[in-house]
Image 1 (cartoon, protein in one colour):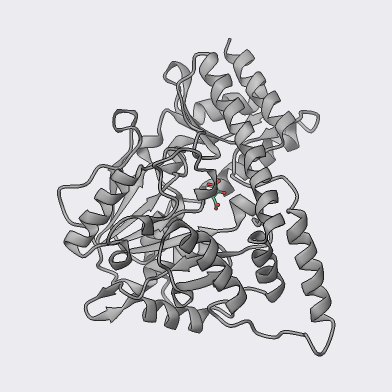
Image 2: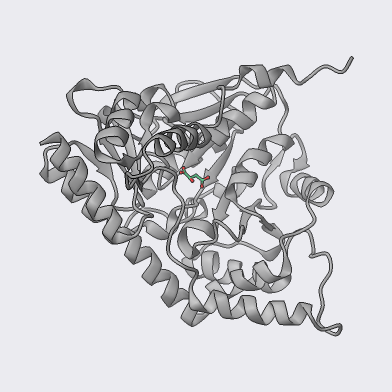
Length: 394
Ligand code: MLT
C-alpha cells in the first residue's frame, strides 16, 4: 500500500488563515445580523489600478486575434516584464540585477514555499519567530528541522545574528507579521554572516513598497556581497493589488553558487520542469505597474493603505495599547491587553466588537500575547474597527 509523506503529520492541524476563516464562518452563520469587519488576512480590498485594467483589456483583445494570440509563456517570464523589473526595481536603486536572474511566477507565496526544493533535505533552517507560516510548513513538509530566531519587544522584533551556523535563513523585511523593518546596517550584518558561513538568505521583500523611512533597504542587493548569498522574492500583490491576479518573481543571482553548482541554473531547471509561465495577460498587467501612470496609481494605493496603518497605530497607541509596525509596513502588531492570550483576544474581539484580526501565536510561540491587524481594509471599516476595539477596551 502506498505510504504518505509522513512529514505532513508534523504540520499544524490547519493553515492559520484557514483556521481563522472557519472560526469566522461559524460565527457569522450563528450571528447573520452582525456586521463583521475583517482585518485578519492581509488581502487587499481596493480595485486594481486603471493602468493595469487597461493593459489587461488590451492583452485580452490580443488573445482574440490569431496574429497576436499567445500560447505557453516563456517559463522565466516574458522579456518585456523582466526588463521592466530590472530597470525599475533594481537598476534605478543602484542594484545590478540582470534579466537572466529574474524568474517570474504566480506570487511570492508559492516561491517562498517552493524555493527550499533546491536545497538538501538535511539543510539546517532558521526562521524568525513570529514568522510567515509558509516558510515553516514548506520545510516541515520536506522533512527539515527548523530553528527559531526570537523576535521580541526586547530586540525590537528583529532577529539577532546567531552564534551558530545555519544553511538557509528566511528573512522578511518589512516583516510579516510584526511590521518592523531591518535597517541597511542590520541587513548588511546578515549578509556578512551568510557570506561567512556559506548560508543562503531567502529574502522576502513582498512589502517593500510600504517602506517610508530612509535607511531601510528595499532590496537585499543594496547590501555588499548579497549577490553571492541571497535570493530575493517579490510580489505584485500588496503594492498593485494582484492578490487575485497572481504575479511575483524570484531573483537568483548568477554568483550564487554552492558546492560548485549555480543556484540560478538549479532554479531555472526546477522552474522549467514544474511551471508553465505566468499568463500573458497577467504579465502585461505587471508591465503596466511600471508605466508612469501605473507607478502613480500604485503610489496612491499604497498611500491609501498606509493612512489606514497610521490610523490603526495612532488609535491604538492613544488608547494606551502597545503597538508596533505600521510605519514601513501595512501591518500593526499590538500587545494584547491584560495578559490575554492571542486566541482569547481574537475570540473576544470577534464576539464583542465584531472585528477579526490574526492571533500572534498563529505565527509562532513568540507571537503569544500579540495580535496582528492589517491596513488592507477600506478606510471607513478600518476606522470603525479601531474605534470599536478602543471603546470595547475602555
Ligand atoms: C497574510 O495575511 O499574512 C498574507 O495574506 C500572507 C500572504 O500574502 O499569503
